[in-house]
Length: 103
Image (cartoon, rainbow, N blue to C red; front, side, top):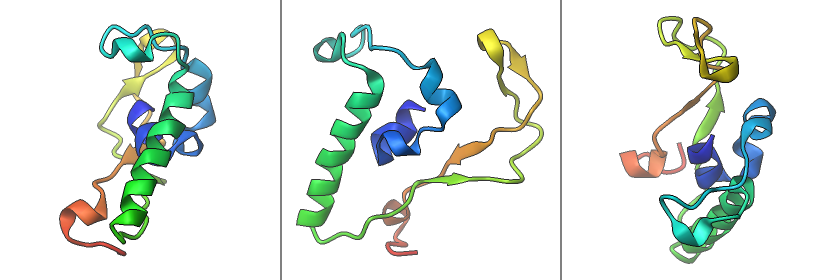
């Protein structure tokens, strides 16, 4: 969820993930203490998009819904307990990083 938000803003974080996200404790980044993670996601997105536009790079979608996610990959369920359901979303590599800008 944090990576999705950091790369594409709060709109990229599925509602069920967003509901479980709370304010940052600031243990890794003290300057983020007390800020809500979803607010930080939009701040990061704005900064990244500004840099991309200045460099003339196209916007590339990173988070894509996946209908047939791998069934062998378990994800955390309620309370952090792992379950056998496949992930609804996966993070994909940024196409620009793979030399496929605009793909």
